Image (cartoon, rainbow, N blue to C red; front, side):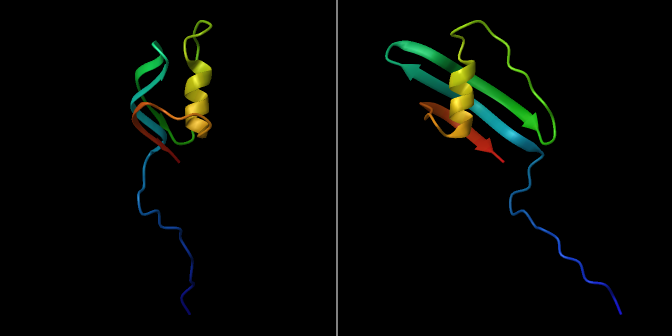
Length: 77
């Protein structure tokens, strides 16, 4: 008798856990993020380094859905 196995079929398979294109966020006249684009492969690790006020925390909050973006596209697995 043949064995049966179940597989999860993802309707939109992507090799990326995070894909951001042209992400921007403004606070009044100040730009916290301007045209941020990156692709983070599934299963990889990434470090964000930058000076105080460079937008690291803002970008993380946008990834988490805590803050909205003003422009760009974002896909999080």
